[in-house]
Image 1 (cartoon, rainbow, N blue to C red):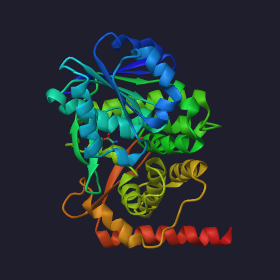
Image 2 (cartoon, rainbow, N blue to C red):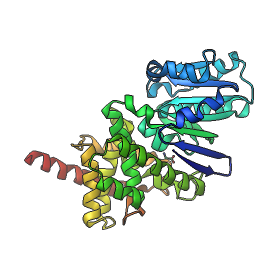
Image 3 (cartoon, helix red, strand yellow):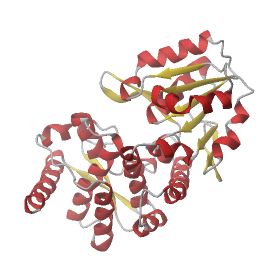
Image 4 (cartoon, protein in one colour):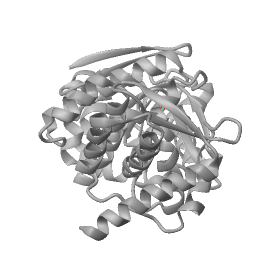
Length: 356
Ligand code: GLY
């Protein structure tokens, strides 16, 4: 088990990672006023554990599973349930679930009585390596992802691989999308991934989760509010991934991150920013997880979503790409050039698939 401390201007977090973290740290909150937020999937698997840990009577809000719960409707339902349960300012919101639960429960905790304690207990690989750490909270609004949100640091994150045992293979694949992103940002993680025989091996994952969390905590400590370009590096693969996710929406976030990284690596390679074995190895890591990279019709229309990305400066499309091992670079492109490079990459893929 490893503890990682994240110190930020707005507050400090301790992230307990590794096997045994849940049983060692979750109990500590049970005696105080807790309000649990989870979803129906997680509750159906872990209701006994949750009840045993936090008490039979601990108030709980169980959201329907899925992204559609990340809405103002459910945000207000959580707040109302907290009020009905007579939660006071000293209470602690415990978010047990994946990214949706973590984001909405985090936002509710930051708003209720101007802010109460928050503990994140991420149960998916993706939320363990990324979304539960760093204090981003949000709900979607008017079809815009994460439009209403805050930065609000959890006092504790408990990332225990225990919860990964019940994840379907697709959820593991999604988490690997973010893990490979960290590999493209961090030389040590890259080496571990490159040398791993089985990327889905539970012991390997338990180890690499801690590395990813450590990397993220270092980034967030230097740029909590995403203002000086450091936190923006965590967006690697996301410009194209998000644009396609918004338009096609049939795959999950982690899969779109893998797809986005693949297309953006093509851009990096065309610019001579990422090359040689390093480029080939990153491509092969992506295709080890996602065997076939989709080529979409209607690409130009889908990519217009990238124009509205909040990270774009001066009307250019910002693409964060791997440069040399352990270093990322930002490429700024006119929309037309961006579309043309992504289309070119799609054509290369189509040709390759035609031959196979
Ligand atoms: N998921 C990217 C960030 O937290 O900044």
